[in-house]
Amino acid sequence: MSILDRIYEAQLHREVYIAILNSMLQGAGNKRHLAEQTGITQQYLSYLLNPRTDDPYNFRIPNPRIAEKIANALPLEYEQREQLLEHMYLARDGTSQVAATLHSELLAHPIENLLAELRAASQEANFTADPQIAKAKNLLVRDTCKMLLAHAILYTYPLHTVEVCLLLHDVQCILNQAADGLYYAKFARAMMDSLSRNDYRNKERFDSYQIQVFRAEAMAYSDLRLYQEAYDKCLEAEMSDAMRYQAEIYIPQLYRDKLQALGGRPRFALSEAEGLVARVREVCDGANNNFAPLRLFMANQYLARAYLKHGNIKKTKKLLNVLFDQLNTIPHVGPLHRTMFLKTYAKSRWEEGDSTEWEYFLRLALSYALDAGLAHQISDIKRTYGLTLVPLLAELTSTH
Image (cartoon, rainbow, N blue to C red; front, side, top):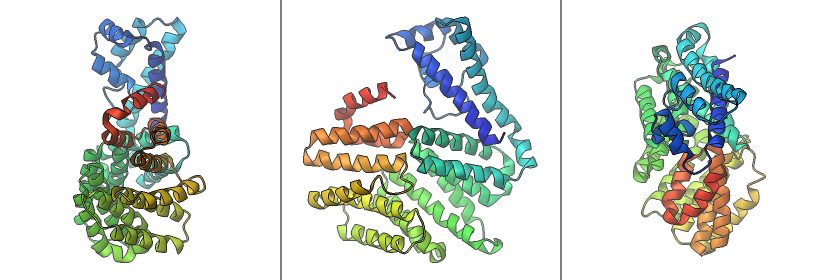
């Protein structure tokens, strides 16, 4: 069983014991009563029951003493109590054993194999149609990357370290940990700045990382709503030497980032946004790549946001209707892409004053986000609508 398989198995045990506990604590006051009985705080209990809590190792998984107190305090049959304890023990032991054996595993097996698994897990998280798989794979990537970065042996492979930082950046931004994502983006950038392209035989790989570290910083800044900083990072990437060799590959992704940053600024020219999308369309139309339609779709989604911000409802509605018709036909549309589009569609209905359609499309967006654990998207929706969202969010949260 590989390292990722063992971490994933530990996650499954954690999800099961969380489900058992939540099923036993549905009544009013039950959580407070359990906390009092077992001598733990209600906050600590909420950490144990919350799969989205940031720390993947310690307080989210109870130690054996607390696990036994919790199991003994619940009105469970003997076999049910034993099953609960087993899942708690295996969740903790599985994670601890991986952490303890990781060093020897890295010495015994090529790190490229583990990185290939991580890369595949990240791709599946981004492009699966199943939100639950997306959530599980994102947590798997996060936990494994944090474990890897705790081991000195990784740093003897600088480009591998950069890739681990980039993977961790991506998932932390998705999980609404943009500040942490920015740290790993800057760490990766510092490593790339210390390296020389001439020392690497695979120039394409080196150039790819050079662009990706700029994009990672831009993404984190945008998630922190520091749009000017994000825009500046996009310009740096655009003017970098690496872009001369990788332009056709990275223009669709970089210009999408630039559109996001542009639309977040107080003032911008629609002509610039339209020009960026026109260039993305030109590259994607000539690309022999089945991801090209998705990249053009996402660029157009940001253009619709730009139209909306300029108050051009007519252009917004026309573009969003076209994109809505494409949504279920474009390959590789994952929960994140779908949530972002539905969020934009709902905002357009809000601006038009159509509360019925706004609620319908926002409900869809939130459902995808909750199922897939897209904490940043949920946070962004909360910030956009404030108290107006409270009843809808409470209803959906209770069923997810």
